[in-house]
Image (cartoon, rainbow, N blue to C red; front, top):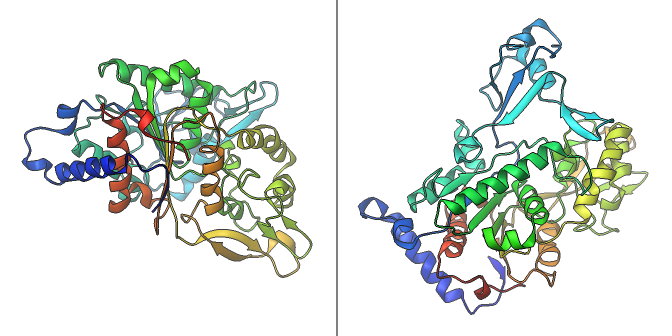
Length: 429
């Protein structure tokens, strides 16, 4: 585990971490809990992509592609759209039609298909992203929720969840983005309520994967005095500063998922982390670096509008990524084979199957993107309190599910949540 920080408070952290886990391992025999004793600060969790549960309501304006898809039309009821149990093949067209997004040229924004209304389930509670599938529960911070609850946190009292519509993504200032703007308003209200109902203590934000981009957008769009009043610490897990190469592989013609959302484009490799001369995709005719992403998207067969939306919405956000200006800890894995380059040795361009070159990372996010955090976040002189933790041989999922990683992650949260800890004790890289 490599950490970029000063060491004067490290013995204190070790003491707190080991004490906390002693208490956790003996929780069943103790008559009290950590938050009863210490008055810990409230925690708000933002999960990774696909974790939030999405419900839909079909109005009379909905025009189904087949009669089967009209089952809920006009009944005024919300039904689970994502994520449901395995559905029959006949239902797949209905899901695709109701889950898709449409770019409205007149509004300059994305919207649902006509007649489809959607909402994230159980905003404010972690139950809104804890799926029934055990595998999804591990992916969606379920193990972390259990660990926090063993430490004395209680859902809806001291522990809160901020599910979001993961199809969407942050956009540049001045750009219409109704869904994400609504999420920011709701998250601000949730943070203020969590603080107010816990003795006016500022909250600790904890994110995983894509949730980190939503958290950074939220913090950087909030007034600085508000951030310093209501946010004690931000713990960002499994999020790099410049996207990841694996996503490019999913956009290739042979594997392409035609349902491409703003959230998909926002995680493409960025020049912030990947150098201008670092080839990510190589064919017999040319190579594509991060700066060549528009050309790659066009060569991969995306329509011109999708390429334009990447250039005008996703790319400006990636290039302007900046620190939250509240105390911050980045927790990432590493030492796991991660897609680093796609090579096409035969003629035929991107239509053939590539040879995959692997490098270091967490299995999803490349090491280059993880290391860029130390420059983009920790290297900014305005970010006074920054800490980077990398856990060796740990995967993207493992950071929020593996026992060793959970110990490290929970130690960071509990340390930040202890009233006696002053943010000034933490130092920037």
